[in-house]
Image (cartoon, rainbow, N blue to C red; front, side, top):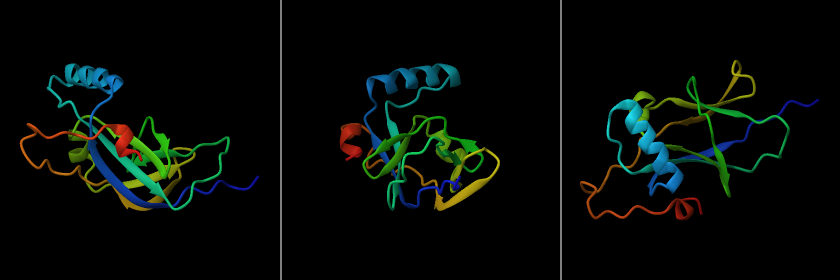
Length: 136
């Protein structure tokens, strides 16, 4: 069996977007869990691929350094995952994005986690794009 080759990541983008209804429930849960009021914001981290890899029975796990991203989704140009607590960016600032098939051997994408874009104001009156728009 030929070893699976991870996708080539050519760009990483962090976009601040409106949370979906499911995201709002997650934000409420995380706020209660951390005893901190989290903003109603979804940070969408998009990994753009050079080409989409073929579908295989063994998927690549995505990591930020040693932290496994528990869930990611596909979009037209690659994959994305969401973050709801800005502390995640502070905890993982500048860390490598990596793939692994087994949680032991890692393939470095050559890309690092970027910080979310700075808000242009205090957040009042700023309209965040819906996620469907962000993922086009």
